Length: 258
Image (cartoon, rainbow, N blue to C red; front, side, top):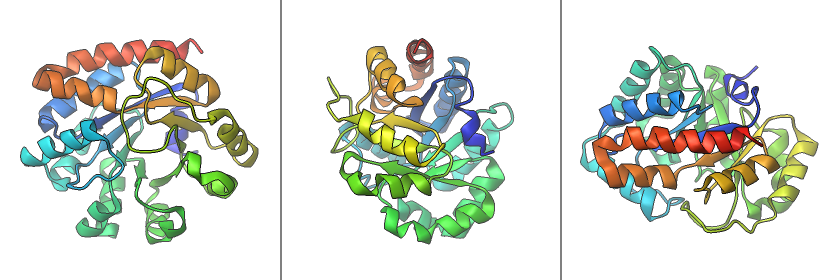
């Protein structure tokens, strides 16, 4: 069984996203451990990129702060290695294909396996082009996570059939960011996914309140939250981990109650 699948074994999963190096890597490490204490089932770690096309202003800002602070991919691998001394929940990287290419695809994915990264999400990688990375991910036992968006329509079944780890369902069109309401017909997307695979699916983009998280978890296997967490780093800087822990605990409790 995929290590990622284990995150979904004990009821609905809560998955926070944290940008590595915002404001610095020691704060990131503290926040990851705080997230685990608060009940996070799987954690997405963002590797900053200078042109993050899927991101709204909040996560773009975090990327720029991290890059200005001198974070590098090698330093992030070092962070993961350190975290793995006491963090056992699944960890996945979220970044862009260009980051992997420029580092060297095989070297990057091998380092993922060596440091304890369980999966890789590349939001700018079209399903049809995943052959660039999939053989390497399979070789090193790293799950290449598929995304399904409202625009996927007649490709949903095909994507679901080939999915690994978990499926990231994008709740709404556009870039990441908090939203007052999510209007996409998520239930019909999830139905098609469930007809074609037993790989768990979680919903992200736009979730910021416990009520939204509970609603999305009731439709799927879990909820993913990024921008609302990144805003805490923007607001509190190095003091953010305590606020992140409190926020994640409230979200996990909402998801757990579903």
